[in-house]
Length: 456
Image 1 (cartoon, rainbow, N blue to C red):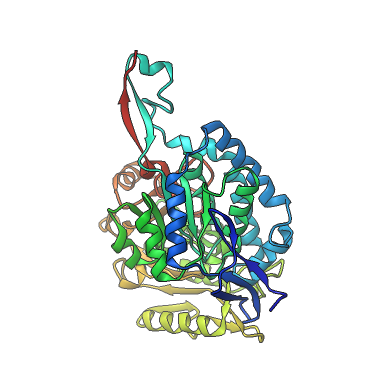
Image 2: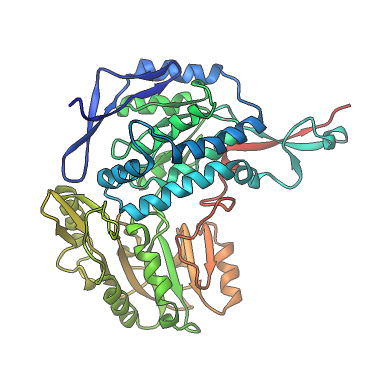
């Protein structure tokens, strides 16, 4: 396996090739890389080094982050050009190449703007440095809650790696545990950060097994993890910020015609292969949901089934066995609903050991049907009836809610609902995001606090 890409751990003393290595395969089962798996002792020593280090001054951090973005996009890293890296990520993760390109562009953009974006969360009544003139008469100063931030990275999409760069901009030292499914993006990003001038005691990459993974979180001041409902339940209210299912939704009220917004609705469901937490998984409509469900199904049915590295690929691809498991789960959960698309299955095998997860559209007979909370990693949407009497309740628990309505009071109520993170009114797809606006609140809200300082 000498021809495999070697993804070493990146510890406080440089790259480390562990004796224990995991073979990373593509969606067809072909080996692509070997990922070093470090033991708990390596983790302990790395976390100790992060705690013992000093953060760089803010201006240096910001400049080096911007430089890292350029290195990430321009240099040959791990023997891969940027184009080769993107194609490898698509082939291994099954995320369509066009989606990978959008995500990596967002990472570069975040690196360049992270200094500005991270400080958007700073309260207007606070300053960022105790040396500011405002502290002579007394002022709030925005300060870190800790020094070391741990990230258990997601593997379903490269995009989330743009978020933790803000923690680095704010002066945290970072420990990243890469996903075994897609370790290429964090490895390339940490390598670029080090090449840009961040020390080996500022940011580390720690591929581990599950036992040592808990050690990373335990030894950090604060952490970020991605996962399902169990992860959210486990870490909510702790020093670890969980990022779980998005359950993003669309609402069409009676004073809006869904036909005028069908492009936005379908795009919200299928963009990025439907793998992201900001894809719409439930569409609620005031009135009969059947015509809208039928129209969505007609649009989604035309998407081609292609390998993930194909330039025209839109849908996510997984190994056949994984795809079939998702299909069985869907068919079991969808029992009793009306299937407009995918009722007989969603798997289309490509003949090479991989399979495309094709779209599914199911109509529900009521807004509170249990299926409305089911989120799957492909374009799978539940279309349900809604009425003003149902109110906000069916819309709770949404990372993003796009609403087509003329009712200002309804928008007020949606913004007042704590479990709805983002409200988009009008033709703005649920996946809309940019640096400087919160994803699920600002990360800085979790990482920072204010202290009063007055000085002579």
